[in-house]
Length: 286
Image (tube, rainbow, N blue to C red; front, top):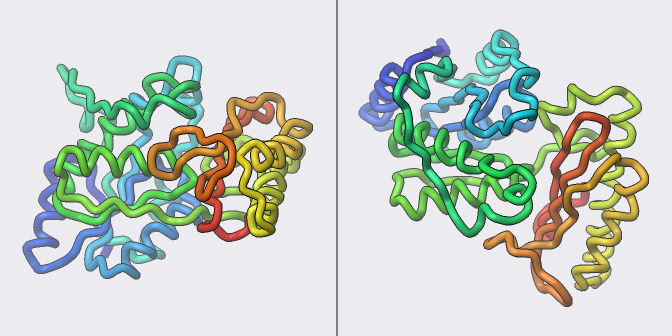
């Protein structure tokens, strides 16, 4: 039977019991509105040998700036719990805001350097909210393997950096993007899209597909690869925040001829902001 808990102490005790019985804990932090990408992380945890899979559902207010979509972010707890039961998740932790941030809470966990560019330029303070809540989840889980999707590539690298720098007993695992058959990266925010906007959103997949094919054919110039993405995205989207080729380790932008890199994009269609990426030479064709 899947266990559902809402208090931090109860969640910590369940994870500790699992380890005490010799089990390996796999953690999947989410904000809910679960889709096949989230569920693939839970499957990966089990496939990698987790005896106890814990999935967390918490829409973290600290990572939303004023004017962003905190209030309308999809909340589908009952459907999420049904999906977790069907998948065989052992524990779901779905705390209320006060359980995570009780009265008087005033601590922030901040990673510098790797947070400054890309998403950091366009969503100031966002990653401070991410690292603060993830640090709390790691503290409450204890020793575990934690699974993150690479659609939020920069977030994955930041969380990995935080765990390493703070000597946290957590192995952070990044998993490939899960896409629809037409190439659209799965996202909880996709449900905001009208049918027309969804069709326009495919410009990202087309652009990344062109860059993938050019890379496979031997193109190594950063500007040429980025231009291939822009050519598909600019006509379809209302605004582009960035299209950048960056180091997969430091997330610093790279120029000229490159031997490795990840193409990252953030763009707006209607009122919805979408992000996506392609790790050149590693990811399959979108």
